[in-house]
Length: 148
Image (cartoon, rainbow, N blue to C red; front, side, top):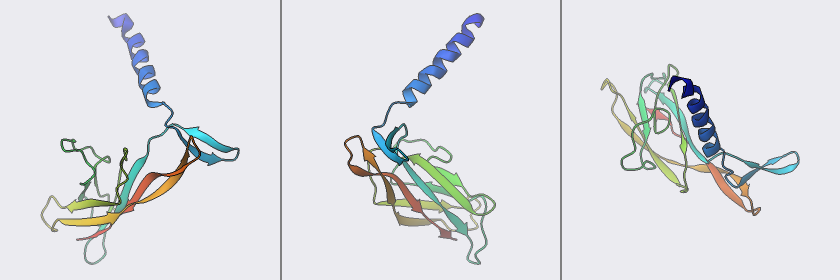
């Protein structure tokens, strides 16, 4: 079995690469017109958490709520983030097939120093052309700031 471990590992890596590299049917403009890309649409949420004096707060748990599946586990930077020393956070998740117009984001302080806050934020979209040349929304973006 030990002599086959490298072979099995190579098969797994190749299988993952092949599964992740399927053409999404989207195109992005380039210098020669349009080219196919191999990425899925994302929902990118970022922002800043500060106190009432405007100072950044580190260690605040920030999560997106209304785009998650019911039993979806918490995954760092996918559906929640922790603010850094500058009070900044980023959540990047697959958008899926839906185009939410608004998202709900919550900021929670595990120490209890600051009260929990909910924010509702609009989502804006960039666009791409599908294989039929139709322009359609692709990545969604939301900036959600909190003042605790």
